[in-house]
Image 1: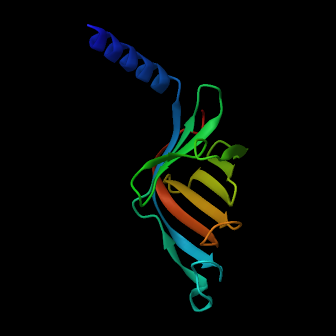
Image 2: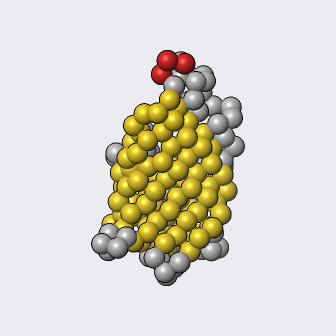
Image 3: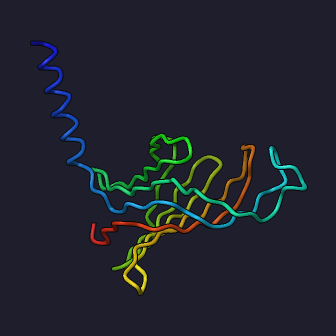
Length: 154
């Protein structure tokens, strides 16, 4: 009986948590270019411009119950990462009728995400990253991918 009660409480808590979040954007795949710095794991002869991609990446922008934003993503490790839980601070910077941009600041990474609807009514997103500081691979990059959903009226 106690196990059943615990299961029901856990289930209700899960539904309550889900109800307090609102999905703003669902996006996937990102292709582009990066400039790799000659530093750490990148030898001088491999530094410079190169293709960059997160082809199996999934990116979800959410509004939390306290009106804060969080960006959840799945990368090459195939694990879900919350930008807030990984130490990032998120700032909304642009919001129009067909575009949203946010900045996420981590200890050694600054990311800018933009979500928009183009003139062909396609949903797109971009990710620009500056990775410097105390990390082994420093780079600056710009990647662009597609979205299957964006709610500009959140």
